[in-house]
Length: 113
Length: 116
Image (cartoon, rainbow over all chains, first blue to last red; front, side, top):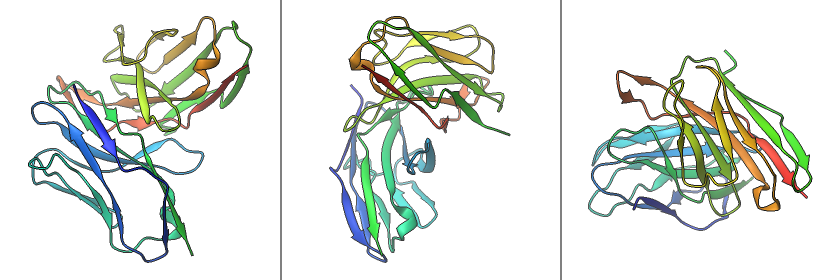
């Protein structure tokens, strides 16, 4: 079946450090891949997405590349800020265009000044 | 535009009580979803509605019912609440045009439910 696995958190970094949050997936066909972010007390917001292999999604300094050969979609940012502290969810939409999303368990990021 | 709104924000129930969580969106989206969020488990789909008048089960539908009242509103009902239903519930919507889903889902702020 379809599933998403994220690295365990919490991840604690100092401001301006480099961030990587690992995400791997299992899916048949060609899913679309997403990163969502949840700030404290809020709902999820789309951060970036990629719809086919080798696509790179980017937004607000975050990037992720759709790697079909390694079934991965790792999230990276070169220099994190305190305001990036949030929970990050990797998700996939199975091929077949159903609109449904399957989420990973979420990774909490805490950035300290 | 308010986007996706949910009521109530917080609720405490006793085991066996019933309640309905309300969700509305003002983006004219066809598709709507209910998720629950539990620690270490991400979001799991309870029910979804691809269009007005249709609903389908998601990954964890047991103990819940839904109603797609009209294009704007999608409610989730707990008929007899159990402690295992203590969770944060999120409603979401997405656009679908001529059978093509745009996949970005827009989320409400959530309802934090505790069942004692």
